[in-house]
Structures are given as C-alpha cells and as structure tokens.
Length: 132
Image (cartoon, rainbow, N blue to C red; front, side):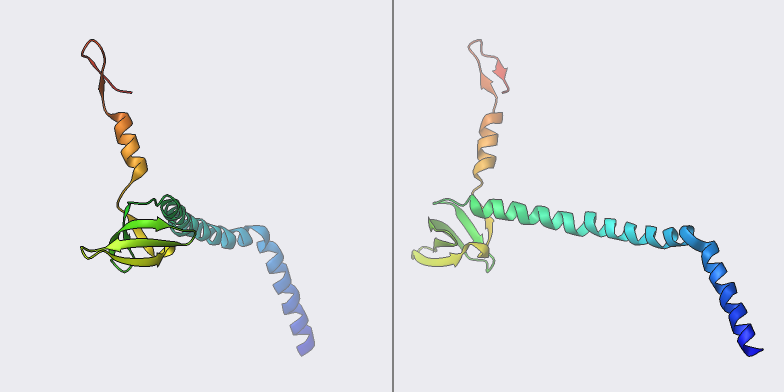
C-alpha cells in the first residue's frame, strides 16, 4: 500500500510539472534577463566608455602638456615613451618618470582647443559675422 501511494504521488507531481511547462519557465527567465540588461546598461557599458576615453587621453599626451597623476602630482610633460612619461614638477625643475597608466588627467586639451577655434565667428569682407 505504501509503494502504491508513492507511485501515485509521483505520477501526480509529474503531471503538475507538465501542466506548468513553458509559461512558468518564461516567468522565471524574464526577470533574470531584465536584471542582466540593467547591469549591462548601468555598469558595463559606461565603464567601457570611460576606459576608451581614458586610453584615448593617454595616447594623445604630447610634450609640454600639463598632466595630473593619480597621486596628485602636477607637472609638465618633457618626453613621452611607449609606456612611460617624463614630467617636470615644481619651480626647482624636479623630473619624475611615471607610467602612463598613472596619469589621471591631461589639463591641456588639444582637440577641444581646435574645436573652439573652428567655432569662432569670422568676419567676411562686408563686415558681417559668419559661423563656420
């Protein structure tokens, strides 16, 4: 009798799973997919964008740029090598060699200066201002 009860409960349980089927699986998967999408758009994508901008800034460092390191040292670039930068700090002309990845900010923005120069209004022969 005990074996018969176990078999009947097992068959009833399997029929219950079969009736739930695909809709119950979708109701469990949809929130999981939504959480993954939220993480992608709020965390992963902005981080990739920041990393790309940082790499572009490091690649655009030129001699005579003013840079700030992650340690807070402000200096002027004297030479740029593949992965190191020689900067001059202070009035006593102290020279420090730092790794490029230690540079947090480039205070001399070359692209921004070029864009501002292009956007300045120019006067034509008639004295009227034109915006290019």
